[in-house]
Image (cartoon, rainbow, N blue to C red):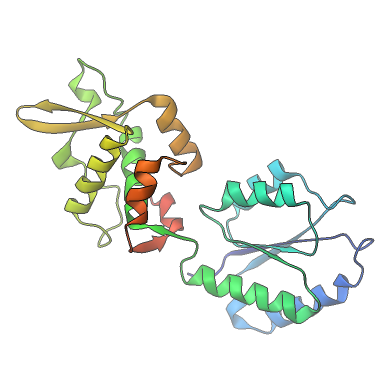
Length: 238
């Protein structure tokens, strides 16, 4: 997939005027390279304290996803928070450039990595998130009396997962891992298993962050999976 967006953050001209010709040189290189034809490039200046509006910029980058390059000194607390909020879907680079070539190389690295599918996550983690998304969309929140609040295990793999990437067996194995970690619950009906979502507060946090946080059971389970896939598949929608 061609790179759709590149976001560059850098000091203002009044702080680092030497960057103006460097950035112009990088832009000229991009205009001469067909690999960059489809990419919309945006530049954002730090304020005088080497900071930026993190809420606004996280939102903007999420609406136009693509790698982010921070050039020169920026407040480390803001950079770390920014990286933490978007790292599931977006690669973040930070460089202390000494010339235009340093910036160009980093932008090229970001483009190549994006087109190669980065950032990447374990396939098990992708399946786990898509299971949670599917059950949430179907309003399967469990309960003790309403069978419609549960989904038959045999129906779980039917739709909602990238074709050819995971088998029915993979999906059901991950569902069992989510059950063991308390993310899902289950019940038996007609000697068959039905699944539903667990604690709503826990599940909503997963849906909002697209991550399972620091759950040690799941992190260990995901970490044993050597099959990696693009994190962009977290937004998979048939």
